[in-house]
Length: 239
Image 1 (cartoon, rainbow, N blue to C red):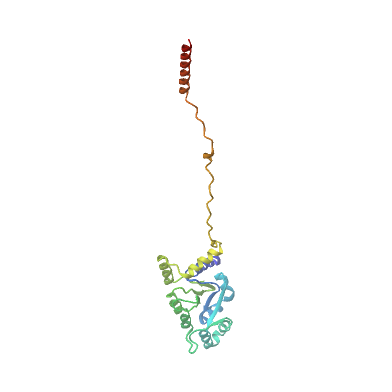
Image 2: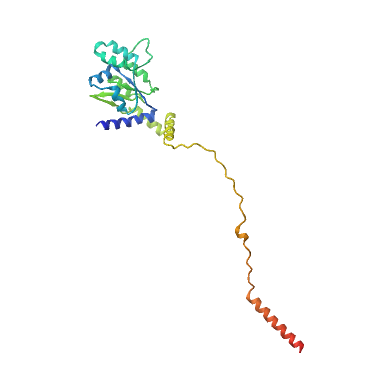
C-alpha cells in the first residue's frame, strides 16, 4: 500500500513540476492549528516522513499569523506551537494586525501561487477554497497517513487549455531544455566549413589510344582485281 501511495504522489508531483514549474526543495506551508495537531495525535514525524512521501527535499514553514494563533489558543496547542517554532517563519502582509491562519495561508498563495507553495491543512473551509484555485498542491492527514490531493478541476482545465492552444509556457521550455542537456541531446553548434571542390583530372577514357579500324575486305579484293588487269595489259603490250 505504501508503494502505491508513493507512485501516486510521484505522478501528481510530475503534474505540478512540468505544468507549473515546481522544484525541490518543495515549499510546504503548514497550518499549525489543524495539521500539526493531527500529526501529533497520529504520531507522525512530519520532518522525517514528508521528504520520503514526496520523494525529494522539502522546506517546512509557517506564517507569523499561524504562530500567533497557536499562542492565543493556550495549553491545548502548546506542543504544536513548540514544533512550529523550529521551522522557518514566512513573512506575511499581516504584520500589524494578525488574521486567522486559514485567511493568512490563503492570501499567501494568492491566485497564481507565484512562490509555488504546498498547503498542508485539516481545515475543511480552507480546503474548499484552495480547491477553487489553480496550481496549489493540497496536503492533509487521513488517520496516520499523509496524502497529496489530486489537482483541482481548475488546475486540470487550465493545463488542458494550454495544450489545446499548443502554447508552451516559459518554465516548461526551460524544463525541456534542461532535460535535453542532462541526457546529452543538445550538441554545441559548430561553424560549418564549406568544402572546396577539387579540380577533377582528365577523363581517363579520353587518354586511351584510338583503335585503328581494319580496312574492309571488299576494297582489298577490288585492288587485287585491278592489279591483275594491269599485269595482263602490260603483257599484251610487250608482245
